[in-house]
Picture 1 (tube, rainbow, N blue to C red):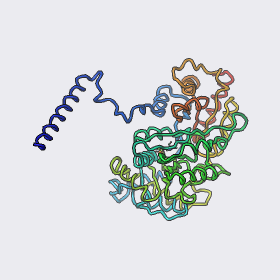
Picture 2: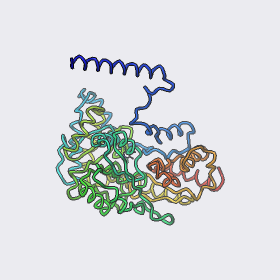
Picture 3: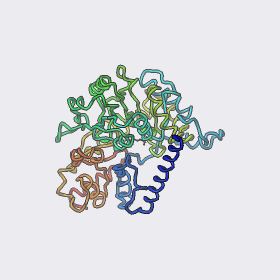
Picture 4: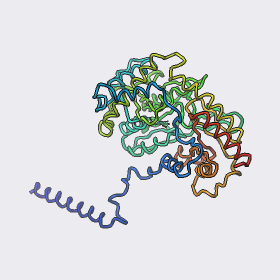
Length: 452
Ligand SMILES: Cc1ncc(COP(=O)(O)O)c(C=O)c1O
């Protein structure tokens, strides 16, 4: 009887749910069957999608929006990719090991074992992903249960927040704030309030995401700042996801410090890198995470049930890139250091012309972005011609359409409640050919002087 009743009940429930779903189809205009699932709601806007479309429509003379070089990547990796597909080994064009192509995980383990001073196991402590993006996604999906809290430092690479929310987590925000607003401003002048940071940690905290060198401010977190964060992570037994995609782009005398190397931090840190940033090949979309096997295990589960495996020839080429640069470590032509040397004059040139135009740039210690306060130029811009809510969106859109220079609105890198903190700024990317930086200078100066 009981069994029969159960069967009946299940049948009734199924019939009811069929009715419900048919009902949704028939009431499509108001129904919700095909609406965005609850966990994605609010995450449907992306500054990248919007600004790529803006550039396609208005074709600005210079696009300093998205972060990628407009010049060639090193010959070594480009040749390596061509050779990988033409190689006599046909298998280099077929699926490879899901958690990372053997040659690449070995190369990554070798480079980072040296960088962090501990022997990484290539098979269990390294995961290759579809860009650093997927490494972030796998870290946050793999380590978040509903209600877990993650601390995010603002401004932040915009995908952190939706990734946490989509996993059922709760982001807690703390902003870096400039301690200076005039004169020469360095990214080291942007700091977080230590008391406030301390107050965000609790038993509910699953982890903190740090990004050093930082996008968009260019801050290279100091040993003192990292130690402060590490001590809180240890005190509250939390994870640290360390997004280090700009690790090689650090300008002297600053030095990149990997938080995983601080005492007792390796076991709670997942460090993320990007081939796109390391070798100036952002279109290749290969990234990685490294860390202790027990933490990486969760990322592997997410990866194997979503992306499963990344492009084989591209992984082979990145592996060759790492092998070649490893041989050159410490030499001036090693790309790990030569790229920063190449970028330094570009950074200084941009800081100079932005100041001349009347903006107030923050000179970055690392990365290849510069934020600049444009508020002194507000009277030259017809903000009311734009309908956006935030002033930096209005400013960047108006500049794209009327002056021909595109930047990115930094309020996109803040939580809803803190977006006002980014509104007076614009973010420009300076990993561009000298001639394009010069062109930007010419356009902006002509605009300032009323000639365009
Ligand atoms: C801070 C930061 N993290 C992650 C990424 C994503 O890197 P990838 O292109 O390898 O997915 C970017 C790309 O701009 C970034 O700026």
